[in-house]
Length: 277
Length: 217
Image (cartoon, rainbow over the protein chains, first blue to last red):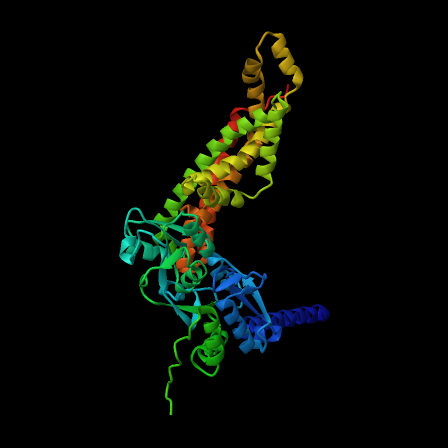
């Protein structure tokens, strides 16, 4: 009897220890996991030039991909200690919410609706929405978009859909999974105008300047693009947010500025001193 | 899990579901008719027609539906042929599934013993009449189960149309996901809608199988 009781007690202790370990594991921040793993896993795009794409040499690169490497450098000391998880627009949030990726850098604009279910750092870049049209197009200004003959293409994101409804309600709006497909639609004549993130629009026209132009002005407000992650992990969020601040406006501004200039051909906004002496 | 925003966005999902049903109906009709043509070519007495049929089946079966849709939607305009996104999607799905359904028809027809055709001809029937009165009624009963499977595959394949800007159910769900960042609620709801549509078609086909059972001769 005593033997049986002692075995039962032993089993309960083991169970309690197991549960205790599980609780401890559940409380462990993903930041600790990243440090122990010595590698970061980041959800990025591969079809959104110039933010994330596969270049002519087969290398996955772009402003956001290289910024992800800078984040890896800050987190684990080496920009190459990174695993790039390629996602589409619709796969980027599930990638972090499911825990497959540590965080994501994929032209994600901060919106209140999203902030309910995702944690965002401070922005690493501002973006606006530009409109690209073929040279010689009847569409000369943004106001010309609101016309029944206009076919306005873009990616299938909430912001793009809302802008199409707001600024070109008479136009036919068509939405694609990727920027690449939306650009292809413009090239093949499927659409007569393409609304795109400013980086993508400028990059496209920079490489197709003989055929396409960007209309003057931007469609709607300036938006903030930020790193996104699964909510509820304060240590990881704080680390990411601090690192972003250091790159965009702090001690590592020089590296950020060099990266920005490489991809956009101009200087980023200057540092904004808090209390300069 | 918070399904409140799903209810708020129900009209968006319902519009998408309606477009999915329209795509499916178009593709089902196209593939059902196209399959007959393919089976006719594959079973023709003339070798060139059989070659055309076989070549069509191999090309359609061995290239992805996504590539076929892109060729029709993005490729054809360069040749001066402009079809709407909806038409491109329906045509691509009809063509690919014609190949599969044609093979299903052929298998059904070839499963009928040749002596039945010979007997029909011996009774004085013309070949066309023998096909219509003796062979097809039996073959159609036998192909109902695989045809049902193919119909359900067509319904699920309609989601590929979202890649060429057809505002069907998957595209609506992607938009909802992008707006809300709530993948589990969104995908669970969309899966249920697809299940309802597919189950409806499967139910009709089960009913047809029950009403027209295979009679073993």
